[in-house]
Length: 214
Length: 214
DNA sequence: GCATGCTTGTTACTAGCGGTAACCCTAGTT
DNA sequence: AACTAGGGTTACCGCTAGTAACAAGCATGC
Image 1 (cartoon, rainbow over the protein chains, first blue to last red):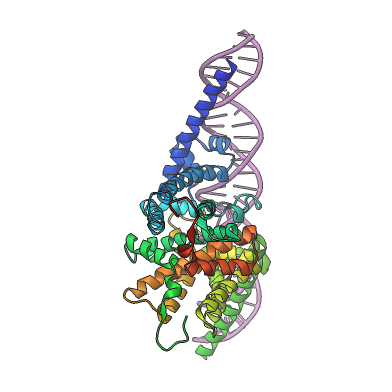
Image 2 (cartoon, rainbow over the protein chains, first blue to last red):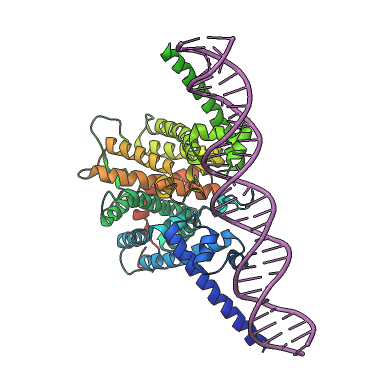
């Protein structure tokens, strides 16, 4: 009895939690990352204290929300990374998957990148530095393990793979951010340019006449 | 007379402005990006409305503050980029300059990257997207022009240079952010690893036995 | 001499935020 | 009937960004 009761309650609580997260999702999608707890509660048809009972504080809610989307994005990225194709094709496909995702839902993506936590809450309420961009960190680590697993990099390969993982993810992120704002070219062109960069075209390019070279 | 008067006033206002910015700087350095206007005003020995008369709103103050540091950092980066050495050396020196800067003053750097603008001000008070990371954008554009000026990239070189500029800056930023948090290796090692990445070692590396290759 | 404006500064306020304490009410158990 | 357990609300706290409204210092114009 006791167990079934607890299961029932837990299932009910989980359902409620999912509903609340979906409501929060809608509000963030509409208002951006600075969505207020009041607005989210109103969207869910309830009032603030319930939100706080479920998620502790705003950081908790945002973390839960971020985890959802981050997991989803990481799944599709993993799929692209694991496709049966040669290395260049995989890299391009992964880049394209990421860019397609941020293109489809820029609000969500901005929320994930700039959680804007630690507003005017308690002075030391949040370590902004450590939580600033969990998605980027997770993607970087993920990519690092893939690189380290599959590539033969000689001694110090683990360090190298991690540096590269975070570096490549940062490249993807910054270029995507800029591209999303200005749309200077098609997605395919962007993907090709970035892959070219990773393939060493910067180092291989010739100097322009005259100068001492870049 | 009129002109000299206006000049006097302007000079006085400029001096005041600089004093205020220096006070703001101290507070941001101490409290991080979520420093309150009250705290800044107190540090400057005055009260809030004066800050607002000088800078309009918090975004204005932060923009002015960011411009200062951004200009300074960009100057040193330009110097590294223009040093008389070959391409690889220049790239490494630029990376090292950036990393040394963020290592020396992480608070300032976090402030520049995550301005945390658009708090609970007016709902459409700020386009978070457009202002999210002005330093990254400016560095990206700067690097793009250098690349485009000095490298022979064939047709479409301008687009390519811009993509690369923003991509490389993003790589530098994300890797630096991660490195600053975990300190997994020395600065020199990080610089070498990133330069290796840009020099195409990712594409050139061999597969590990067995798998279909990354 | 004196009113006029301009800059610099203040106090005192508004509206909204994150977060919480206290209470209310309904269901089920004994 | 009494009692407890959750889900829910109202009403509040302390804080924030931002804004009147008012008070001095100081040049100018009549």
